[in-house]
Amino acid sequence: VQLVESGGGLVQAGGSLRLACVVSGRSVTTTNMGWFRQAPGLAREFVAGISKSGGRTDYADSVKGRFTISRDNAKNTVYLQMNSLKPEDTAVYCCAADRTDSWTRPRLPGGYDYWGQGTQVTVST
Image (cartoon, rainbow, N blue to C red; front, top):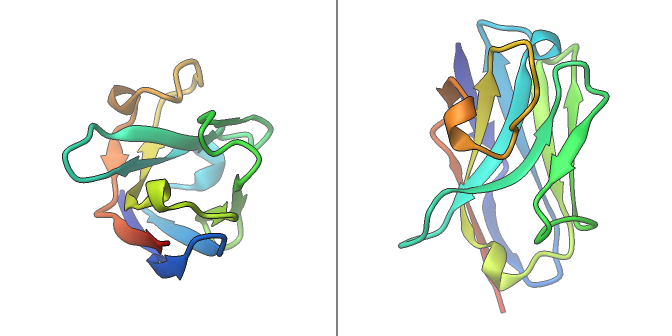
């Protein structure tokens, strides 16, 4: 299973970006997916998750109402739409895949089996 992120970049505060995570080797319809981020000197942080059915989503409080996770089954791709970006959103964003059947702890990094390399998001003031 491989995960490849794209879509990061430099944006001004208040702007938007859409990240994409292309999954190969496994269908997103059978895989719980998550987005995490890590800023320099800080621990990895949960951002958003979507269940394999696509029927459930979860968001960190810090991004709720600004970020939206979605997926395109035909493209086997998961997206993270980020609006109203803030400087504190600056981080490397990684997608992750969970091959288990349940979706009980989507916020825990340890619950994921596969990780992408990440894409840098920088939000300037």
